[in-house]
Amino acid sequence: MADGGDHAGQTPVPRPLDPIDRDILRMLQADGRASIRSVAERVHVSRANAYARINRLIDDGVIRGFSARVNHERAGQGASAYITLKIVQNSWRTVREQLQALPGAAHIALVSGDFDVLLLVHTPDNRTLRELVLTRLQSIPEVLSTRTLLVFEETDLDHAPGQLTGPDGAPDTETP
Image 1 (cartoon, helix red, strand yellow):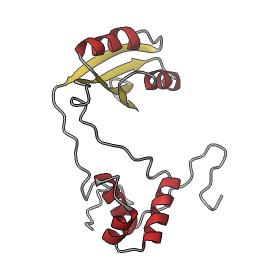
Image 2 (image 1 turned 60 degrees about the vertical axis):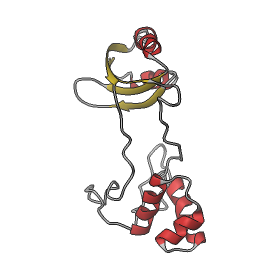
Image 3 (image 1 turned 60 degrees about the horizontal axis):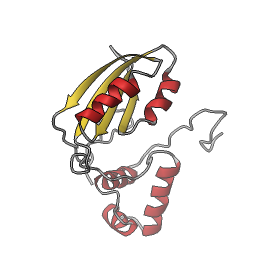
């Protein structure tokens, strides 16, 4: 369809983002609670225009949602780990469903290289992490092996200008 609609399972072609869209994304990445009024003022458009642009970004799947950045340790999730998994060929969809159901699973990625899946988990303590890896993960029939990398310290990177990419894939260095 010319309107970017879905063709029998095909992903719609993404619309290009203009500098105002990029500025809006930068603002919302830094503060997902920013009001429409403050967004409109910062990017120099009307509130109606800012509202329409944000809704279009949501409808187009550019903005997938809004969330809080959590300090996992203060939230009672003191043990974090990246776990690499080797899985049976062509079992990604089945394994992904099982990993999504794991308590503490925060991020799941199908990757290339020496392993197939990278899983980030947050658990209350090392005993719970051990149980998750040795009992839950290794009992999934499609999981051939795991390797656990404990996180000793982590830093969330603030979403600052330059983290979006331009049409060529290079970092977008335009500043608001």
